[in-house]
Image (cartoon, rainbow, N blue to C red):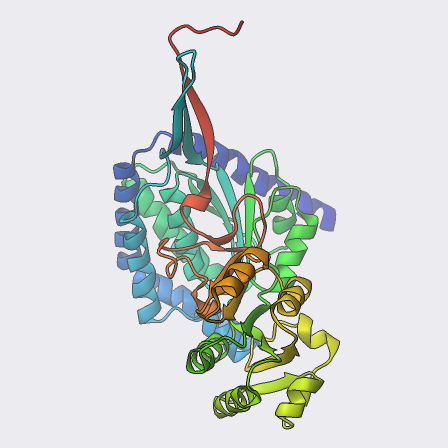
Length: 424
């Protein structure tokens, strides 16, 4: 029975893939105006169907509570009035962004008269696997459409009703504007066999983007045959150099840790130059204590602030996503960089210093998707980078790194124009 169910689900997902591939071919010819009209129509349909979407969401939330989901998980699931409004406005904001497809990235002419253009084009079919937040259904669909990609969405089982209601509205809005029928599709079953089918469907799906906890992302990355854009963890650091402005450093560390501790770009480790006045760390500890932060320090840090708990090796490798911060005193910038490159996750790391040479060294030598000079790590985000909305963060090196926004949802091809040239 299990095998037959899995075969049935696999065939369902294969049909989604075939349909998405056909839709992606049609979208290649869509103009910016056509896509923007579709996005506006989708926003209007979401508005019109808000009561039905909220009703579906209420049922998901009630079931989640019955199943014992944590308050934090339930909160991510809720679509209140403000979140619905933000989701609808998000589609209109994406419509207002420049079209990423069709951009000429580079052009040049050869001596033989051949004109070459490197042109941005859609990736094709994108599979999006995500947890909890039903607004991702609209965000991801809109971003992919704006970049002329078809998308197959697989949300968390706890949000299936909400996701279906949103996807139905998006498809109906798209239909009214002439959008290909299968440009936006949602996997309609809860069974995990659907995920296995989607991530191994490399004949139809061009890239998988998982968005959720480390367990989900690691399971996708380890089992996929389709390329995956991902980040496992956000083990982010702030290094405070002896040449730092003390007040600036206090402010940056407090913001990086406390402004929103449960997100991937929050700081998890503070590195302090041994040459820095010990009173800087003592006051930093007072500031963080007032914010409810638990500090876990190495021996030298605890010599300055004895109230710190003792840090163990695992602390340097832990993404707390909580008001906990590990603290290490290091012998200068080289040891700080070595620590970051050894224990970090390649996400976002910062230095606070007034020394130009150390700023340059840190920027060159830290191997992370985003490196900050005298600024908080909390800015790693598509909107904060001025890129518009994002579909996720990547710590990979290929094909995108950092916030994955509209431009990162395209690839490129070469268009070569001649006047009859042949190769000799």
